[in-house]
Image (tube, helix red, strand yellow):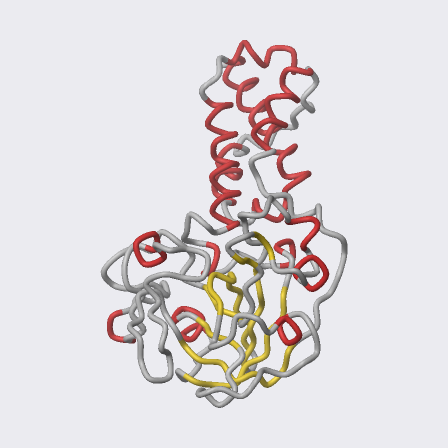
Length: 291
């Protein structure tokens, strides 16, 4: 029994190290940590270089929300906001089909199907009835694309506030997957930037600056939101909202944290579970030095 106690305490110690550096993401999966600490006993910190290296290797797979400098992004207020969805067919006011996005040529396929906006065909979990999305159902589009076929646009390095910290080479967008907050009335929703629009792909002066959206066929709409965002905010299909960029460390847990291979919460949760699984599969003797 003593070996099992040592083993459990070692796992708790590893979890504490992860929590120290990635405490925000642990909120997405409190059940795992709670289960591993039922005995309520104190544990010693990890002491050996081998154990520290093992934790560091797996922790590196988590997205570190503390690497960004402290900052506040301004709200863009009273923005005409329209609803769009993965798999949407072209219409007069939306001439571009959404089976692909500006950053994903197989968007509908990678999402898992058409993200129908029909209220009768959606669940209380903010997802379609027919399938579980393989990407975050809380997504948006803004009218700027930082990419060209040859790399990034000339102004991107200066216009995008997080360009330097997020740059991963000329082939990867620094905008895709970015989190934003959207509010209407007394409710605030969080979603990831996954496409470009409405209508424009070049309006960085609005997206990152102080300009208003340009006139267009949808009453000057400056933000497209998914059916999940619409439903969480109790929006009409076309409505007025406020929005702003947020760093991930400022995104609270919510229904936007549940699904998606592109979802920061899900990616961090999987990395944490991988760390705990690695610990639980090891022999208790490995942690004898912790006693």
